[in-house]
Image 1 (spheres, helix red, strand yellow):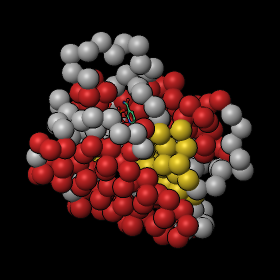
Image 2 (spheres, rainbow, N blue to C red):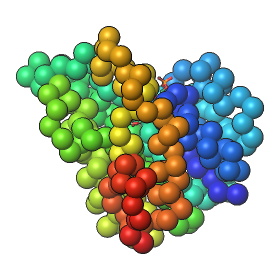
Image 3 (cartoon, protein in one colour):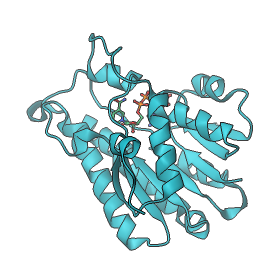
Image 4 (tube, protein in one colour):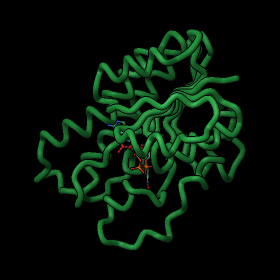
Amino acid sequence: MPIALITGASKGFGRAVTYALAERGWTLIVDARGEGELRSATQGLADVTAIAGDVTDPDHRIRLAQAVPGGRLDLLINNASTLGISPLPQLADYPLSELRTVFETNVIAPLALIQLLAEPLTDAGGVIVNVSSDAAVEAYPGWGGYGSAKAALDQLTNVLGIEEPRLRCYAFDPGDMRTEMHQLAFPGEDISDRPEPRTVVPALLRLLETRPPSGRYRAADLAMSEVAR
Ligand SMILES: NC(=O)c1ccc[n+]([C@@H]2O[C@H](COP(=O)([O-])OP(=O)(O)OC[C@H]3O[C@@H](n4cnc5c(N)ncnc54)[C@H](OP(=O)(O)O)[C@@H]3O)[C@@H](O)[C@H]2O)c1
Protein backbone atom coordinates (compact mmCIF):
# COMPACT_ATOMS: atom_id res chain seq x y z
CA MET A 1 0.00 0.00 0.00
CA PRO A 2 1.27 3.54 -0.69
CA ILE A 3 2.76 5.59 2.14
CA ALA A 4 2.24 9.32 2.78
CA LEU A 5 3.44 11.86 5.31
CA ILE A 6 0.95 14.69 5.89
CA THR A 7 1.69 17.69 8.12
CA GLY A 8 -1.08 19.56 9.92
CA ALA A 9 -3.53 16.63 10.03
CA SER A 10 -5.60 17.50 13.10
CA LYS A 11 -7.91 20.09 11.51
CA GLY A 12 -9.11 21.63 8.29
CA PHE A 13 -7.77 20.43 4.96
CA GLY A 14 -5.03 18.20 6.41
CA ARG A 15 -7.59 16.31 8.43
CA ALA A 16 -9.90 15.87 5.42
CA VAL A 17 -7.02 14.55 3.28
CA THR A 18 -5.94 12.21 6.08
CA TYR A 19 -9.44 10.71 6.23
CA ALA A 20 -9.64 10.31 2.46
CA LEU A 21 -6.26 8.58 2.11
CA ALA A 22 -6.82 6.37 5.20
CA GLU A 23 -10.15 5.25 3.70
CA ARG A 24 -8.29 4.30 0.51
CA GLY A 25 -5.87 2.09 2.45
CA TRP A 26 -2.81 4.35 2.55
CA THR A 27 -0.25 4.00 5.33
CA LEU A 28 0.03 7.48 6.89
CA ILE A 29 2.39 9.39 9.14
CA VAL A 30 0.80 12.63 10.31
CA ASP A 31 1.49 15.49 12.68
CA ALA A 32 0.16 18.65 14.33
CA ARG A 33 1.29 20.55 17.44
CA GLY A 34 -1.79 19.89 19.59
CA GLU A 35 -1.49 16.29 20.74
CA GLY A 36 -5.07 15.82 22.01
CA GLU A 37 -6.66 17.13 18.83
CA LEU A 38 -4.31 15.04 16.68
CA ARG A 39 -5.16 11.89 18.65
CA SER A 40 -8.91 12.43 18.40
CA ALA A 41 -8.65 13.30 14.68
CA THR A 42 -6.82 10.05 13.90
CA GLN A 43 -8.58 7.75 16.38
CA GLY A 44 -10.05 4.70 14.67
CA LEU A 45 -8.17 5.23 11.41
CA ALA A 46 -6.24 2.15 10.31
CA ASP A 47 -2.49 2.37 9.73
CA VAL A 48 -2.00 5.99 10.83
CA THR A 49 1.03 6.96 12.95
CA ALA A 50 0.35 10.29 14.67
CA ILE A 51 3.36 12.20 15.99
CA ALA A 52 2.64 15.47 17.80
CA GLY A 53 5.12 18.27 17.24
CA ASP A 54 5.96 21.52 15.48
CA VAL A 55 7.27 21.36 11.90
CA THR A 56 9.69 24.18 12.72
CA ASP A 57 11.43 21.91 15.28
CA PRO A 58 14.32 19.99 13.63
CA ASP A 59 14.07 17.12 16.18
CA HIS A 60 10.38 16.69 15.42
CA ARG A 61 11.11 16.59 11.69
CA ILE A 62 13.69 13.85 12.30
CA ARG A 63 11.11 11.86 14.30
CA LEU A 64 8.69 12.16 11.36
CA ALA A 65 11.34 10.98 8.88
CA GLN A 66 12.31 8.06 11.12
CA ALA A 67 8.68 6.92 11.20
CA VAL A 68 8.67 6.34 7.42
CA PRO A 69 8.68 2.55 7.08
CA GLY A 70 10.78 0.57 4.65
CA GLY A 71 12.82 3.40 3.12
CA ARG A 72 10.20 4.54 0.61
CA LEU A 73 7.69 7.35 0.64
CA ASP A 74 5.10 7.81 -2.09
CA LEU A 75 3.74 11.19 -1.01
CA LEU A 76 4.74 14.15 1.17
CA ILE A 77 2.03 16.76 1.75
CA ASN A 78 3.42 19.94 3.31
CA ASN A 79 0.07 21.23 4.54
CA ALA A 80 0.84 22.68 8.03
CA SER A 81 1.01 26.44 7.81
CA THR A 82 0.56 29.62 9.79
CA LEU A 83 -1.36 32.72 8.75
CA GLY A 84 0.70 34.91 11.08
CA ILE A 85 -0.90 37.67 13.12
CA SER A 86 -4.68 38.13 13.15
CA PRO A 87 -5.99 40.65 12.18
CA LEU A 88 -3.56 40.67 9.27
CA PRO A 89 -1.16 43.64 9.51
CA GLN A 90 -0.07 45.85 6.62
CA LEU A 91 3.53 45.23 5.55
CA ALA A 92 4.60 48.67 6.83
CA ASP A 93 3.67 47.55 10.35
CA TYR A 94 4.53 43.84 10.08
CA PRO A 95 6.52 42.70 13.15
CA LEU A 96 9.65 41.12 11.71
CA SER A 97 9.91 38.45 14.40
CA GLU A 98 6.41 37.27 13.38
CA LEU A 99 7.38 37.35 9.71
CA ARG A 100 10.34 35.08 10.51
CA THR A 101 7.94 32.60 12.15
CA VAL A 102 5.70 32.68 9.06
CA PHE A 103 8.67 31.94 6.79
CA GLU A 104 10.07 29.28 9.18
CA THR A 105 6.71 27.47 9.19
CA ASN A 106 5.55 27.98 5.61
CA VAL A 107 8.85 27.83 3.68
CA ILE A 108 11.85 26.57 5.67
CA ALA A 109 10.07 23.65 7.40
CA PRO A 110 8.55 22.25 4.16
CA LEU A 111 11.95 22.39 2.42
CA ALA A 112 13.66 20.83 5.45
CA LEU A 113 11.21 17.91 5.30
CA ILE A 114 11.78 17.56 1.56
CA GLN A 115 15.55 17.45 2.16
CA LEU A 116 15.19 14.83 4.91
CA LEU A 117 12.87 12.68 2.82
CA ALA A 118 14.48 13.14 -0.61
CA GLU A 119 15.87 9.61 -0.75
CA PRO A 120 12.72 7.64 0.18
CA LEU A 121 10.67 9.93 -2.08
CA THR A 122 13.04 9.42 -5.02
CA ASP A 123 13.21 5.66 -4.46
CA ALA A 124 9.42 5.55 -4.69
CA GLY A 125 9.21 7.93 -7.68
CA GLY A 126 7.12 9.93 -5.26
CA VAL A 127 5.06 13.10 -5.17
CA ILE A 128 5.54 16.29 -3.14
CA VAL A 129 2.47 18.48 -2.59
CA ASN A 130 3.18 21.88 -1.08
CA VAL A 131 -0.14 23.46 -0.12
CA SER A 132 -0.17 27.01 -1.47
CA SER A 133 -2.71 29.82 -1.65
CA ASP A 134 -4.06 32.40 -4.06
CA ALA A 135 -2.34 34.92 -1.75
CA ALA A 136 0.93 33.70 -3.34
CA VAL A 137 -0.05 35.24 -6.67
CA GLU A 138 -2.62 37.96 -5.84
CA ALA A 139 -1.81 41.24 -4.03
CA TYR A 140 -4.38 41.42 -1.23
CA PRO A 141 -3.84 44.15 1.40
CA GLY A 142 -2.75 42.57 4.69
CA TRP A 143 -1.67 39.32 3.06
CA GLY A 144 1.95 40.36 2.34
CA GLY A 145 3.56 38.21 5.04
CA TYR A 146 1.65 34.97 4.48
CA GLY A 147 1.39 35.61 0.72
CA SER A 148 5.11 36.23 0.21
CA ALA A 149 5.91 33.03 2.15
CA LYS A 150 3.50 31.04 -0.04
CA ALA A 151 5.05 32.68 -3.14
CA ALA A 152 8.47 31.49 -1.92
CA LEU A 153 7.01 28.00 -1.40
CA ASP A 154 5.62 28.08 -4.96
CA GLN A 155 9.02 29.00 -6.39
CA LEU A 156 10.78 26.30 -4.35
CA THR A 157 8.28 23.87 -5.85
CA ASN A 158 8.92 25.14 -9.40
CA VAL A 159 12.69 24.77 -9.08
CA LEU A 160 12.44 21.37 -7.37
CA GLY A 161 10.28 20.19 -10.25
CA ILE A 162 13.17 20.93 -12.64
CA GLU A 163 15.94 19.71 -10.34
CA GLU A 164 14.20 16.44 -9.41
CA PRO A 165 12.85 14.91 -12.63
CA ARG A 166 12.16 11.57 -10.91
CA LEU A 167 9.67 13.27 -8.57
CA ARG A 168 6.43 15.12 -9.17
CA CYS A 169 6.46 18.45 -7.29
CA TYR A 170 3.18 20.31 -7.00
CA ALA A 171 2.14 23.61 -5.47
CA PHE A 172 -1.55 23.00 -4.81
CA ASP A 173 -3.85 26.00 -4.30
CA PRO A 174 -6.99 24.71 -2.55
CA GLY A 175 -9.01 27.94 -2.73
CA ASP A 176 -11.05 29.29 0.17
CA MET A 177 -12.09 26.74 2.80
CA ARG A 178 -14.15 27.04 5.98
CA THR A 179 -11.37 26.40 8.53
CA GLU A 180 -9.83 27.88 11.66
CA MET A 181 -7.11 29.54 9.60
CA HIS A 182 -9.68 31.12 7.29
CA GLN A 183 -11.65 32.41 10.29
CA LEU A 184 -8.44 33.96 11.69
CA ALA A 185 -7.99 35.76 8.38
CA PHE A 186 -11.52 37.18 8.64
CA PRO A 187 -12.00 37.68 12.39
CA GLY A 188 -15.59 38.22 13.46
CA GLU A 189 -16.91 37.62 9.92
CA ASP A 190 -19.39 34.94 8.93
CA ILE A 191 -17.42 32.48 6.75
CA SER A 192 -20.21 29.89 6.54
CA ASP A 193 -20.46 30.43 2.75
CA ARG A 194 -16.92 29.06 2.24
CA PRO A 195 -16.72 25.40 1.15
CA GLU A 196 -15.85 22.68 3.65
CA PRO A 197 -12.28 21.37 3.28
CA ARG A 198 -13.53 17.88 2.37
CA THR A 199 -15.04 19.31 -0.85
CA VAL A 200 -11.50 20.16 -2.05
CA VAL A 201 -10.12 16.64 -1.47
CA PRO A 202 -11.36 15.23 -4.84
CA ALA A 203 -9.23 17.83 -6.68
CA LEU A 204 -6.14 16.72 -4.77
CA LEU A 205 -6.93 13.06 -5.43
CA ARG A 206 -7.26 13.89 -9.11
CA LEU A 207 -3.80 15.48 -9.07
CA LEU A 208 -2.35 12.34 -7.44
CA GLU A 209 -4.13 9.99 -9.83
CA THR A 210 -3.31 11.84 -13.06
CA ARG A 211 0.30 12.81 -12.12
CA PRO A 212 0.54 15.78 -14.51
CA PRO A 213 3.93 17.52 -14.96
CA SER A 214 5.38 19.25 -11.89
CA GLY A 215 4.00 22.76 -11.40
CA ARG A 216 1.31 24.88 -9.75
CA TYR A 217 -2.30 23.62 -9.79
CA ARG A 218 -5.51 25.21 -8.54
CA ALA A 219 -8.17 22.95 -7.05
CA ALA A 220 -10.84 24.85 -8.98
CA ASP A 221 -9.12 24.04 -12.31
CA LEU A 222 -8.53 20.39 -11.39
CA ALA A 223 -12.17 20.03 -10.51
CA MET A 224 -13.33 21.52 -13.80
CA SER A 225 -10.98 20.47 -16.59
CA GLU A 226 -8.80 17.67 -17.90
CA VAL A 227 -5.23 17.85 -16.62
CA ALA A 228 -2.49 17.66 -19.26
CA ARG A 229 -0.49 14.48 -18.74
N1 LIG B 1 -8.52 27.77 4.66
C1 LIG B 1 -8.32 28.43 3.54
O1 LIG B 1 -9.19 29.18 3.07
C2 LIG B 1 -7.02 28.25 2.79
C3 LIG B 1 -6.89 28.91 1.55
C4 LIG B 1 -5.71 28.76 0.82
C5 LIG B 1 -4.70 27.96 1.31
N2 LIG B 1 -4.84 27.33 2.52
C6 LIG B 1 -3.75 26.46 2.98
O2 LIG B 1 -4.29 25.17 3.24
C7 LIG B 1 -3.50 24.52 4.24
C8 LIG B 1 -4.41 24.02 5.34
O3 LIG B 1 -5.02 25.14 5.95
P1 LIG B 1 -6.33 25.02 6.87
O4 LIG B 1 -7.15 26.18 6.52
O5 LIG B 1 -6.86 23.64 6.79
O6 LIG B 1 -5.67 25.30 8.30
P2 LIG B 1 -6.19 24.90 9.77
O7 LIG B 1 -7.60 24.46 9.78
O8 LIG B 1 -5.76 26.03 10.63
O9 LIG B 1 -5.30 23.61 10.10
C9 LIG B 1 -3.91 23.72 10.14
C10 LIG B 1 -3.33 22.39 10.60
O10 LIG B 1 -1.89 22.51 10.67
C11 LIG B 1 -1.45 22.28 12.01
N3 LIG B 1 -0.29 23.15 12.24
C12 LIG B 1 -0.25 24.49 12.21
N4 LIG B 1 0.99 24.93 12.47
C13 LIG B 1 1.75 23.82 12.65
C14 LIG B 1 3.12 23.61 12.94
N5 LIG B 1 3.96 24.64 13.12
N6 LIG B 1 3.58 22.35 13.06
C15 LIG B 1 2.74 21.29 12.88
N7 LIG B 1 1.43 21.43 12.59
C16 LIG B 1 0.95 22.69 12.49
C17 LIG B 1 -2.67 22.60 12.88
O11 LIG B 1 -2.68 21.94 14.15
P3 LIG B 1 -1.98 22.63 15.45
O12 LIG B 1 -2.46 24.04 15.49
O13 LIG B 1 -2.40 21.78 16.59
O14 LIG B 1 -0.50 22.54 15.18
C18 LIG B 1 -3.77 21.99 12.00
O15 LIG B 1 -3.79 20.60 12.12
C19 LIG B 1 -2.47 25.54 4.70
O16 LIG B 1 -1.25 25.32 4.03
C20 LIG B 1 -3.07 26.87 4.27
O17 LIG B 1 -2.08 27.84 4.09
C21 LIG B 1 -5.97 27.45 3.27
